[in-house]
Every structure is written in structure tokens, then in C-alpha cells.
Length: 296
Ligand SMILES: [Zn+2]
View 1 (cartoon, rainbow, N blue to C red):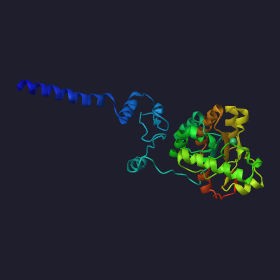
View 2 (view 1 turned 90 degrees about the horizontal axis):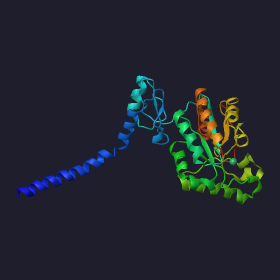
View 3 (view 1 turned 60 degrees about the horizontal axis):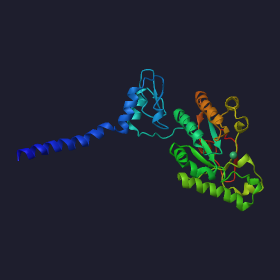
View 4 (view 1 turned 90 degrees about the vertical axis):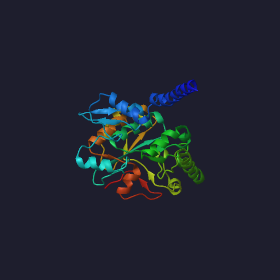
């Protein structure tokens, strides 16, 4: 009997060890995050980017790590109190009295470029509008879902980038509807705005695209030059409050340009907003209307 009891204790010890060892060997995400924070020796820089998109945290010169991903910490006491009482995701604040610009990226989705752009926007609290081609949506579901999750706007750039001026009334409607359906199937939202391929329009197009049509006020010609520096200069040399900037998601040079443009616009005091956000503060849009900028 005594021997049996001994075996019982040995068995129990083994069971307990088996139960606790794996838990210690595979720390939770929170523990991993804490460990990653401890390990870094970053000051005045961004860390944690390898943990995934949108989770980079800012470390100030004292080694204080920002609580919210993509945001530098505000140090005033009032801000601290606000941070403690509010939920993690704060409501987006746009100051209508301050300058704003809408960056738009056409012809995607294309994750290798789009994700970089979104990483950069997350750091500077900016949002953009991605006018996507419906046919490409199923291949980039994750990227489209990220756009929605992070507050970017998905616009309709037709199902397969046909020039609508060459199509019949029924074909035009089909191009718009099929893109909308593809975006909805991939990301659960329907685009409210349309960008016409090539910006081409005629009377049939104007009468049959039953959504606001968004043109642009700054044409970077990024697709033509494929030159990062020229693309950056084209934006920074002429940008004004209310501008809509046309760029393309398909080219790495355009992505690289966006990574320079975004911090420069932020430094110049521009709020980077979606087209719908800008329209909301600048007179709104109506179905069938054509817009190339939103002045105050
Ligand atoms: Zn296009």
C-alpha cells in the first residue's frame, strides 16, 4: 500500500510537470511583447515592427515605450489620464480647421506595396484611399481586410480596369457592380466612391456611374516616371490644403515615394485623410458628381 502511494505521488508530479512546462516554454503574446520590449535598446525610434503590421511602438529618449502602436506618446498629464480611461482604439480626430490632403493609390490591391504604405500611415496617424481593381481582390483578401481594419478607404476602380468611355451603359454598370461585389466578398465593405480608369469620361459614363467620381488635383505621373525622387518632388512642391494626390499601388518606386511623402506631409502639418473624410468636412459629395479637390 505504501509503495502504491509513492507511485501515486511520482505520477502526480509528472502530470503537474507536463501541465506547467509547456506553458512556460511557450509564453503568451503579451509576454512575448514584453520580452521584445525589454530586449530592445532603442531610444527615439520605432520598435516591434517584426511583430506584425501596425504594431510598431515609439520609444522616446528616456526609454519610455508608447502604449498605443503607431503613436508617439503624449507626455502631458491630461493625456495620460485620458489614455487610462479610454479604450485602446481612440476615435479618429480630424481638425477641419487644419490643412488636409487625400493620398490615393490606384490599380491595386498589391500587398507588397500597400502594406508598406499602411505601415507608414500607421506611424503618422494618416489614412489613405485605395482605388482597387475588382478582379485583383480575391488574391489580396488579407490586404483589403487590413485596409478596412485600419480605417483606410477602399474605392472602386472597376472590375478589370476597362476604359469606360468605350463601353455601353450595361457594361459600365457591370464594371462598377462587379468591382463592388468583389471588394464586398473580400473585405465586407462596398466602395462608396469611383475612380474612372484613365480618368476617362463621356456623357454615357457620367449618366451611368451612380456614385461620386473622384479625380485628382496632383498627378504625380508615378506610373510613367517610375522615379521615387520625382514622385516625392511632384507632391511636396505643389501640395495645398484640400488636394487629392494620384499615385499607383503597383510600383515599388511609388511605395518608396509614399514612405518619404507621408512623414514630410505630417511634418508640414497636413492631416492625411481618406477622400470620404475630406469630403465630409468640405461640402460633401453626391452620386454622379465629379470631384478633383475639396477646397475649404
Ligand atoms: Zn488605373
